Structure formats: structure tokens, C-alpha cells
Length: 118
Image (cartoon, rainbow, N blue to C red; front, side, top):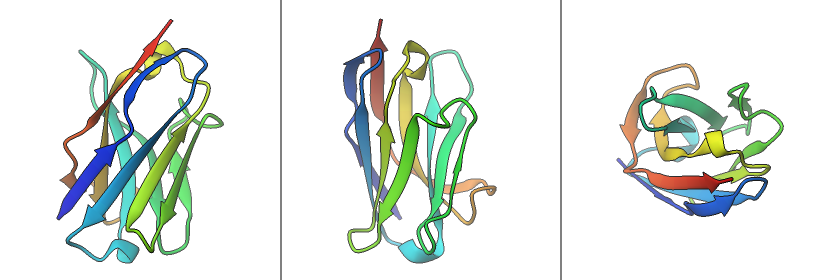
């Protein structure tokens, strides 16, 4: 199983970024794909999750209305569109594969850094 993230970077508060995750090595359409994040000194937090088979999604309250998760099953890819970014969104963002949006991930990407400046 391999998950490769891209799209992180530095952005000003109020700006937008789009993260991408390309998955391989498992049945993409049968699993849930999600994004976690970890800020310095804080625990990892589940941000968003999608069931690629039907497109249903789940979001943390802290990002609802600002972040959108989507998938492209032809490309085995999942995206996280992040709008209205806040300084507190600064973290390393990890793409994860999990049996459901409520299960522990069974695979993690290496992460991509998102830094939001004030």
C-alpha cells in the first residue's frame, strides 16, 4: 500500500490550497480515504474522509464549510480543497487509507506541510 501526498506549501490566512493523494496497492474503491493533520505539540486530528465507492464524506467540525474532500476513482486519487485557511490550520497533513471513516487507518502517507501565515 502506498499513499503519496502533494500540494502543501505556505499561504496567507484566508487563502486556499489543494492537497492531492495518489493511492496504490489496494482496492481503492472498497476503502475509505481520509486526511489527518498534526500540528506541533498537538495530537493527530482527523480532518476529512471519503468513501470513494459512493462519494459520501465526513468532516471534522473545525473544517466544515471550509474544506472539501473529493475523489477521482479513475486516477486512484483523493483531493482536499482547503479554503479560508486559518493560522490554526498549520500542520503536517497525512493521507490515510482506512476500512471506514470510523476505523483506524491501516496505511499512512509521509505527509505534506501546510503553513498558514497571519
